[in-house]
Length: 501
Ligand SMILES: Cc1cc2nc3c(=O)[nH]c(=O)nc-3n(C[C@H](O)[C@H](O)[C@H](O)COP(=O)(O)O)c2cc1C
Ligand code: SF4
Image 1 (spheres, rainbow, N blue to C red):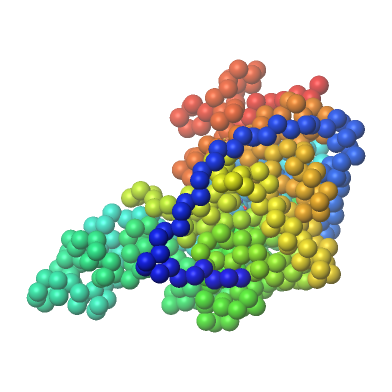
Image 2 (image 1 turned 180 degrees about the horizontal axis):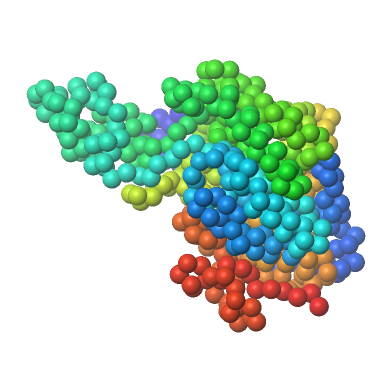
């Protein structure tokens, strides 16, 4: 991989690529016979389990859990609605492995979460009439704080160092107490502050404090290689007990395990730096999980084909990661892209940074406002390279692709080219949870097609219940009187029902 070259001060900034608005392309839908004979609707083996088709709903957080991380009726209804469409696999949202408060995100860090999760797995099996496998995506994340009021930052959060004291005293022209030094720093104009604070302190001020796997000076971060294997293993064991068909280890986007895999991981304890060092904890976590659940339970992984950030991992790393994962015995690898904190937009004061707001976020959930390549099948080249590398290493671990895929034609072409073994669609499934079924029945013309403008992602960003602009204000169907609504009562939380008969 080529490192990003350092810019000389004389160099003019690189021109921004022109923004191009793309249209969602027209498509031809198959007849029922064509769908039946297609690759996409053919079965695939995922280690110990077989998916009925290669259709897949990847993980999407809908913000419907209770504030203490429990499954609610809204969670059951939400996943039941996806199960109506009978995808081959439905991956339930990123679910926290620790027993710590994390807002309305699902959690699995204790046995008390089991009854709700059992009901969730049962709901998917029942509503899909046994045709959908349900996996749980399990994750760990590090602490992140909201962007502080500058006054609060200087008064409370900044750890005052001698360098700060000296800088402030020099600026004031006299010796200062710590309180005075803080006040002086708080009143400094920005160019001086940029000299007074370290880059990390400036980031804490501008974006909010965020822990990193490189923070080896913090005991709990130093200890991650000791704590995470058993946390993941216990979570996976609980998922198995709850009746899920598998777990997906979340090694993607902005979270702990992705950070271990990343080129930005420079830990010095043998768990960073070299590619083997960066893979070490992800492989140790997998070994602990496998040991806990045995070979008769599907264990897959989602990770990044490309972090899409300066200095981050790209395909040269991810092909190596994929080969290591295949060798270790993962039952599938699912490829995503980007979604990092590193290039996220600056949040407003009082909000936390969100990893899908910068250029890498766009790579994760590409929209029709794009560059010349456009959003459709945008990330398939990553799964192609990864699949090629995995096969060249002598493994046949199935590879899942996602990103801007919203038609049978796209999916079938990807499979025909051998660019992936399974084709996932997140936002298209949100726009129309019945769409796989409609296509399979030869009724593709009835599919409600995603616009790829990310209204749903905007809700996710605000931690509001995720819905789709194509149906959330439509109250014309017979269920609209009883359908659950958002807190403000304006949006329905479930797509209108579709009846095949
Ligand atoms: C609202 C929303 C929530 C998401 N939550 C997750 C998540 O919990 N875990 C994950 O791996 N990806 C998550 N994603 C990313 C999707 O799984 C998928 O990779 C991305 O949307 C690109 O696929 P698409 O073009 O088919 O939508 C989320 C996407 C959306 C729109
Ligand atoms: S809100 Fe927009 S981008 Fe999201 S699923 Fe609906 S149509 Fe697609």
